[in-house]
Length: 305
Image (cartoon, rainbow, N blue to C red; front, side, top):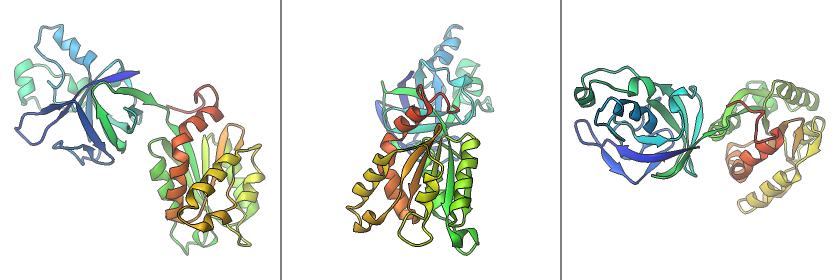
């Protein structure tokens, strides 16, 4: 596990960077108050103190912030982490590595001073997947990245008569935890849905989220299809969702959504509407990491990082 040892923001070109004891990382934007907030692939830059120390061996007077990084870290080998690695920054924020190193123009003040720059080789650039506050002394750790499958059960959606908004919403919400490797739309047919769940399980996903087909209608068969596949029920998930969302609508009590385990895959039923999907996932997310670690066994070793 690593540590954040310094935080810097550059408010504008040719303006001195500002060192702060804390900062706010904003999803899809970057470090609040930084000039380069909003860049797609390089929202927040990180550099390890160990990388800076390599230049200090050459008696160059450099330290945290000398290379215009947003956060200086210690105790984690950033430069050797693959692109796509997720980083837990403090208790709230999640970053994903989008680039390691960069092309150096060679005409910046840092290069003029040091005649050497470590950012092109060992600087790490990230995007913010989950907002949160960070402060000097917070931990920085590699976060397990899980593989998800999403299945939308909808007769109209599978026929191309209705746009699927819930499936993509699930994928966006799950980004801090992992990637959706497959998202499909199937009709409200018990056999077809059960077959798709089994296929995703065989494909090695860690969790499957279904959306739609959890109500009282004659074509609402998602819970039954899920029961056809799972080995064990996880009743607490459905109970918690119904309890917490009932405050927003009494119709929550009409949901028949279930959750269960098949082998080392967790399957969770969600409602069909995008709004309900967001509300239900908000109930699950605080325990999702622990649930997946438990299902996968031994701290989530079955997931790919």
